[in-house]
Image (cartoon, rainbow, N blue to C red; front, top):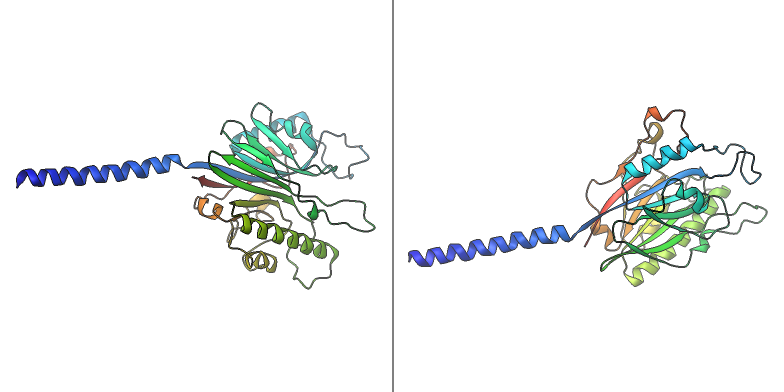
Length: 296
């Protein structure tokens, strides 16, 4: 009888150890991936008197670029979706080529959207056709809107499709009945996003939509409700106010869909706030907004 009890204890103990080992192995197999959106506020190498620039655009010095580069390194993000960057030369001042691969939407404008992908995480990327429908034709206006960078990130067998965007400014919280021109354009852009989400529902790939929405999205916002009527989505900034520049509602957002919603690490939303010691240095009028995902 004693031998039977000993064998039973050994069997149960071995089973529990196997369960624990399997749990640890599963946890170790998950790769936390930090995902960030950062509007970099007219990041350009052009001189202040360049005729292509508005008169109020900040002129960056070498000290400014060095400070931005230091903050990017401190951020330790694997995927940084950026907005308002004047091409690869300006981006490399902040995201050096030995550390990051850079991808851009091919719009011939100064305020480009793009992605900086860290090179030490074993990530690869596939560029999808640009979401040009976001650049809505504006009759009588020569300033183009921006298209969306559509890119799929691969890590082993896991895939995450990103839509990086910078939407029309000037319609922060107005109702759908607003006749304001900025609102009419923004509503059209949200319709484009809605169609993109429906395509992702069809293909089933995990996805994230991130960038500068220029909209104070909440779960009760009619534009957010329109998107969620087509697919279950996670607005990672919901319920929070941004501590950036004294505190305000978020206009930079990260929205997750399909299996990416299950990958979100709880309470991982972070905002990198630039300290007061940065006075005298031109950084950005937006702070980086990040979440972490646990990829399988």
